[in-house]
Length: 381
Image (cartoon, rainbow, N blue to C red; front, side):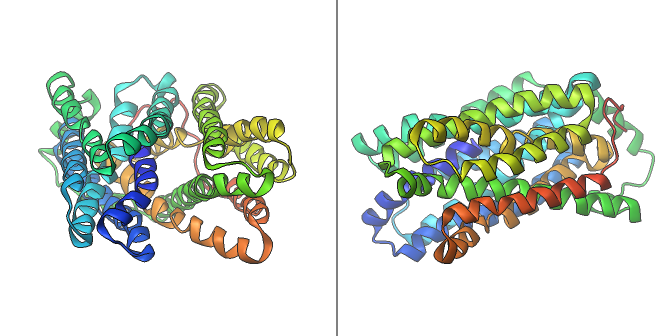
């Protein structure tokens, strides 16, 4: 849903602008408004999930997202678009952390990273579906029908609510807390100096993760057009291969993290990301760019699924969904600046330089991992 929505907005902006007479600034602000909603929704739904349950709150986050995505289809002016996109963003922001907490608590410790990595794979399937669906729907029925399709996951929410039960770990935690003082989940992210340092380190990692993703996915089609003269449609195919590489990377990362540990797996993928971005910008012909894009995707975004297991093991059940949502969505807010920063660098030095400079961030990432304790296979507290 997250991935499909991001791609859907990108495809539909031109059509929406023409239909409702939006300026370039107004059109661009729709993605920003959605992102602001996602950050706030991440905090709110994360805290709610730690109080009232993962399944219940995941259901409401999906319903919130789906309803206001569907209502976007009937927006008549810029003001209505802003309201609907902001409210859809609230629901969107709740899904990542609550879903990751649910998966981490439901699966056995020995396969926890694999479980959360498969959740991450869903985020890559979304854009791939978007590539297949958005273009034809826009051409035949227009942008409003595209947002009606985006509302269909509301049906999934009812299935989730009927068929899933709360993880035993959460139920046990709730029972234990009935007779003791409840601490506000956000406070548990900075409960002491060591925890505060870990939270800051995770925030830096999430920021770099999303910065690289947004920067590459936003500008890759333009880079390919400039480098080898690809059309928009052909750039889309090459971009889809990069997204497929990201999904493969997540599956590999999950298996590796469960076998050799979180810290070493992050180091391997971060080192791979450094090498792949530096090599990729040296490629200049279609076939190497195709293969290089797949490898780039494996290492740059393969780590995403690992964050679910990593954060699940670092924080107690009473704050697990809060930690997942708050830290990831704050990182997403910081990473959301990537398209603008890429553009500023590209003005003077070109997009290739902007992509290559990601290597500096991934090197910083490798240092930050030292601050994260290794808890592979640990029982959740």
